[in-house]
Length: 104
Image (cartoon, rainbow, N blue to C red):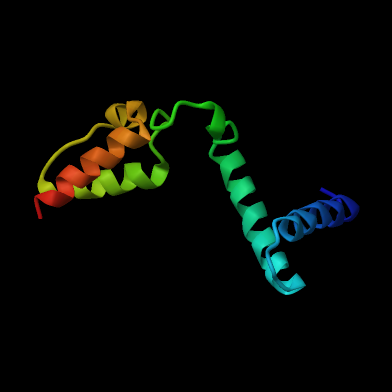
């Protein structure tokens, strides 16, 4: 993205903030825009760009969930294979994490 495209996108973002009636300084909007862009980039990296088109709860488990599950399972003396983790949805991972945490 070149500088002119970045400035144009920021202008559109700023206009949307004002259109919504949100009172914010340019610095605050710039901070929000930076967070927004970082989230967009993370979504692209994690292949979550079409999240709104997917069935809620059916998205693959996040890497963060997988690592947390592996850690919890290890501490509980359980074994979760990489294959199981790769087939797990976010919803399933969340439920398993909750179940493992309830045992503490």
